[in-house]
Structures are given as C-alpha cells and as structure tokens.
Length: 122
Image (cartoon, rainbow, N blue to C red; front, side, top):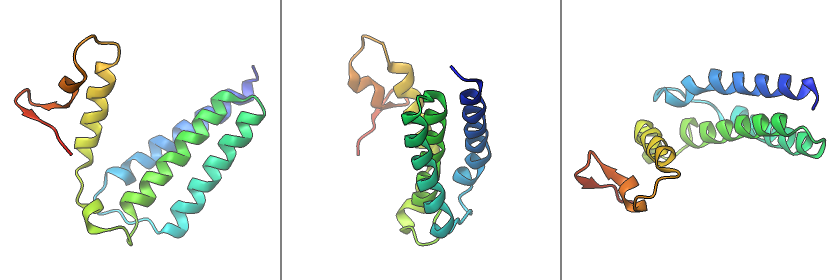
C-alpha cells in the first residue's frame, strides 16, 4: 500500500466536502460545461487509479466524479424544473434509512415508511 493512495483519497474526500454545499443550495446553478468535464475527469481518474492498484484513490475519485454527476443533474441551469424542485433532504433521509436498515432482519418494506404511518411510494 502506497502512502500516495491515501493522499489522493483524502484530496478527493475534501473535494466532496467542498462540493456538498453546491448540491444542497437550491439557488446554485453550475453550467454543464463545468460539471460534465469535472465528472468525466473524476471517473477517468477512478479507472486509472484502479488499474494501478490504488483502490482508495479510485474510490475517492469515483465518489468525486459521482458528486459532479449529481451536480450536473440537479444544479445545471438547463435541468428540468422538476429536478430543481426536488427536496434533497428526502433523498438524504432515504439513504440514511436504507443504511440503518442494512443487516436488519426486518421486512424491506419497513425501510420506506415515512414517520411510521405513511408508505413512501414512487
């Protein structure tokens, strides 16, 4: 294991931390000319790091590329209005509930119950 692997992973992790406010800010608009190349670079770096055996760097770059993909989808000025009006807190809550439900022996359908009374359907 190379120490450089951890350095690149930490750098990617910091970029995710710095990009998170952009994803949460409903008024943020990031041009596709910025987000799509950044997404592509992150994913190409992930593949390159993976082929070099630098799995931590690959995971970090993949996560950063994925964050740019979400920004392109949700915060692009040309994205459909429906996407801009989506409440990301619901997405975050679903992810948290899903992660908490991993390894539990309860029914899968209980993961999608909102406030214990309403079923969450799409």
